[in-house]
Image (cartoon, rainbow, N blue to C red; front, side, top):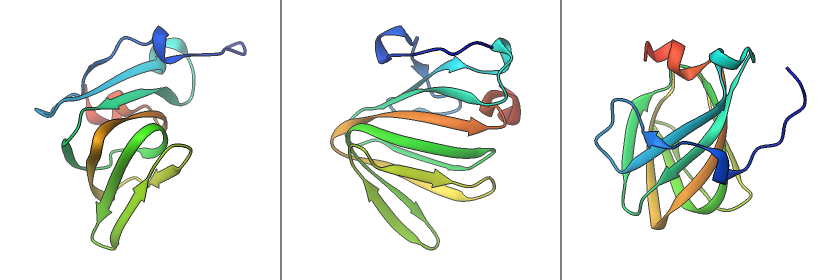
Length: 117
């Protein structure tokens, strides 16, 4: 792979697999491009909740808006510029606040392969 730059306008956002919520994701680097990690963007509408056990190590960077990530150990709230790390095997509930949120993410290994999508 070569050095690349990405922007939100380049991503094809699709409904988050296995979710009914108004939450969308789009990969820019993944198993199909030969990278060792998945890199992309996420978009969460206002008042949405996603609950799952992490199939991968996931690092999420909040670009716009606010969201909370809750686990059995407590809740962290993140806004623009904040980074949230969610380790593989951790049960999380992600909830948007206000107008929703836009995030960037990096997962290891590839989330689609780990989920079987």
